[in-house]
Image (tube, rainbow over all chains, first blue to last red; front, side, top):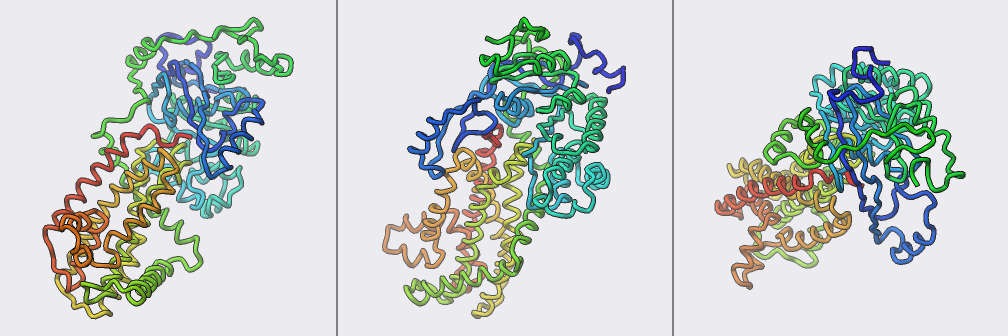
Amino acid sequence: MAAPDTPAGGRTSPVPERRPAAIVSHLDIIYRVVGGKRSNTSAIGDDEGESIFRNLIGRGKTVATVQSVHAVKDVSFVAYHGESVGIIGRNGSGKSTLLRAVAGLLPPTNGEVFLAGTPALLGVNAVLMSALSGERNIYIGGQALGLTKAQVKERFEEIVAFSGIGDAVYRPMSTYSSGMAARLRFAISTAAVPDVLMIDEALSTGDAEFRKRSGEKVDEIREKASTVFLVSHSNSTVRDLCDRVLWMHHGHLIADGPTEAILTAYEGWDPKKHPAGPPGIG
Amino acid sequence: MTAGPEGLPQTPPALSAEEAAALAKRHGLPSLGGRPPFGDYVGSLWGQRSFIWTLSTAQTVARNSSDRLGMLWTVLNPLLLIGSYYLVFGLLVPTTKGTTNFIAFLAIGVVIFGYMASSITRGSKSIVNNIGLVRALRFPRAVLPVAETLTQVVTVLPAIAVLMVVVIVTGEPVRWHWLLLPVALAMQTAILGGMVLIAARLVNISRDMTNLIPVAIRVLRYVSGVFFSIEAYAARFDPIVGDVLMIQPFALPIALVRQCLLEEAPIQWIQWAAGLGWAVVLPAFGLWFFWRDEAKYGRA
């Protein structure tokens, strides 16, 4: 947990002059998806008939189909320095899309995102260059994060030690297990102490020992007044690491508040009993 | 959204767009929506030159490690290609009109055009093939096509060595003109950098473009004087046709290299000036064209 004198100390209601790290204002993201559906933006209860029809006119992969997916709908929030914000919601609720938009990797369709400093997004799919060794990926990732070559060299041992992958760092990343790759990516992303660190499910593949170390690293980053966003399906990870939670449902932000209160409501919501949606929306 | 009745905490009310912008301004937070001004973009690209080099060497290593014979192919490939072109255009359907040392003439065409073809084919995919990198980290996206262009320079060097051997073996005398070869190749690389930037944006807009690029390259291969002399064969058309065919940025680098290495091709300074023009205009336009979409790379 952060030291009492850091901004994370006052974590319930935003004090007016806390320094914002990310301001998201009425954000809409509409994807133009080519060649099929993205698995994490498709609606729950996929329409089978529609895809058969699409295959008939599209003849599989040779002709790509184009469709729009309204993945994020009118989302607004302000995140502050030193805050650790969890984003929860079911598959396809727009969590990862929101994260990528806040990282500036997806242009908003409507609305605006303001961000202090350089973001680093750490996702499960963020393979850097899988044909290359971990060593080269450390140099590529480090320099893309704004370190100089000399700085990467200086921190190289530290990065490898933190990732705990040992001599495997000299093997191509395509030979890594998903856990090893996730650990190395985490080590690279945190080597530069990004102003805003975004973690997309990347911690779920590590083992218990690595989760503990990465939790410590996240705290350390927050103490340096950076902001951490975390997308996770693991409520315990969110509980351990976040002091604030955003609940996404069908692209809407339906709740934003302290971790415990939101998670309790989230865990208490049974989609079978409330098929129309969670409490609070119609 | 307001809180529900079942104990959900009150969600802080959303700021209006004006309030959000004012808050951002007060704390100096830049908006992510747009792209940086063009001047800043060029500056940040220059600031990333060490990163570009790291990427480029990494790509070179990755490619050579995937084939068993590795580097050997970079020598064998151009030799086999020159051989097969000679079989068709030297022996079966001769297009040797207006040339004296056809083998060297053809070798230059094949190697130099091959450099352009592989640069554009590979470079056009430099964004879509590195989508993981683009989606994970923010950096000037032009880093990727520029790094790919550099990778292609390194990859073509063995083929240039093969070319020099062919030129010497076929009896071309060593002349001071050979010293112009690096100049011609540098101009060609700059031209290619511009084209790669343009192609990378087009492919990012629509992946369908990757199917059109091979077609365009094939047409260009046939009209750019790879295996025939444009001067000799365009003579029956209006002179303007020959000039256009000659001055277009795919034919011109081949002509310039021939003027460096072949005694039969006298230096035509007007063509060198045109080459320099392309080498300035195309990279500048390409970078500007690429920058226009800076915020859109990495989209799903």
